[in-house]
Image (tube, rainbow, N blue to C red; front, top):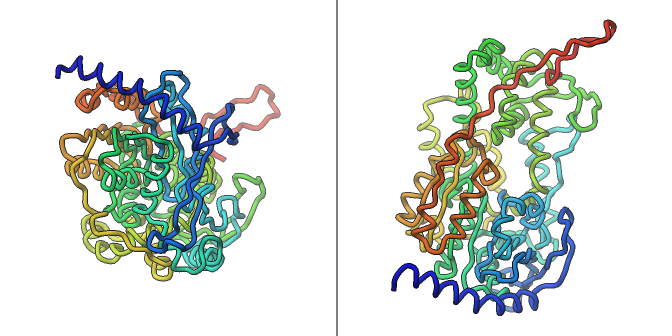
Length: 511
C-alpha cells in the first residue's frame, strides 16, 4: 500500500471510529466544573480493586477528567496526561497544562487521570508544610517524625485497613488503572504525555500495554531504574556546579560576585546558626536556626527553572552576608509555580517500593562516580538520607523484576530534556533512548531546566509529533527551532535613584 493511500485509509477509519468514541465518552462521564478551567468539562470514575488478588476486598475510585475535542470531527486517539511527583494530581495540573495542549485539543480529547493516591483518587496526603513558619523545625528528624504521624493516620483511612495496604500504590498497578480508564472511554489506542515521574509511568504503560499505545512524549525522563533519591543528589550537584561555573565565565556575574564559590562554602561551614529573616509569604520577621538541609533545599529548588536560578548568585551573596530573604524568597517562588500539592503518602509508597530496594545497593557506585566528598559536593547523598531512613519503616509494595527493564519502544516516543535540569538531565534520556531503539528520539533543550514542553517552540514540536500520520513522520519532525533558546543571565540588582531628595536609595531584588 502506498504512503498516500495508507494515510487515506487511516483517516477514513478515524472518521468512522470518532462518533462511537464520542458516544462512549459521554456515557462514561458527566458534565462537571473544575477550578481553574473556564469551560465545562466531563468527569468520570472507574472503580478498581485495591489489591487485584482480593476479588472481594476493598475497592477505590479512580477519578478522571476529559476535556472534549473542540472540533466535531474528533480523532479517536485521545491524549492522556501523566503527572509528576510522584504524588501530583493530574486534574489539579490541568489549568496549567491545558494551554500547552491547545492545538492537540482541537481534534483530540485530553484526559487527566488522578493516579491512585493523588487528587480525588483516595489521596494519601500528609501535612502540607509549604507555608510553615520558619521557626518550625524542618530538619531530617522533623521530616521523619511527620512521616510517622502521617503513616499512622493513613493506615486506617478508607479504603486502607492496615499499613500494608500502602503497598498497593505502585506504578505498575496504577498503569492498570489507567488502562481501565482507556477501556471505559472506548479508545483503541491512546497518546501519552508524561512529565518527570509521569515519564516513568508512561514507560511502564508501554511495557504492560504496548498494543494500546500510539505515541508518547516524555518530558524530563525518569526511568524506573534511576534510583531517584540518589541520582537527584548527583544531578543537583552537577546543576549547581554548572551555575557556579557559568557565573565565573560571565564578566558581569564575576564582577558582581567575584567570591561566589568561596562565599557558598563559607555559608555552609558556619551552619547551623541562629538567624533572623522575614518570611517570604507572611512578611513577618522570625528568628530560627538555619541548618544545612534548609539551605540546600532552598538552593536546589530554583535550579529547576533557569529564570529562578539566575537569582541564585545574588541570593547566595546576600545569605553569605547574613541576609537570607532573597534565598528564602526564591525557594518559595518555585513552590508557588507548581500546580497543587504532592501527596507525600503516595510519594513514599511509590519510591520506597520501586527505588527503595536499590537505595543501599547503588549508593557506593553512584557516589564514587562523582569524585567529590560531602564537604565539596554537599548535595550528594542529601536526599538519600531521608529516603533510606523513611523507607526503613514505610510499608513497601512489590514490583515485578521486568519493571526495571527497558525494552524496545512499541511506538514512536519523543524524549524531551533540559540541559540544565537538576533532577532528570540528559544523561538519563540518553540511556533510555538507546534502550528504546529506533522508535525513540531524544531532543535536548540546552538552556532549559526541569520540564521543557512550555518553553519556546517545544509545544509546537510536541503537537506535530503526536499529530503526524505515522511513526516515521513523527520521528522526522523538525526540532531545530529550540537551538536558539538562551540561558537567562545572572540577575543584577538595579539601583534606583529617587526623584525626591529625601527618599532612600532602593536596591531592587537585594533585600
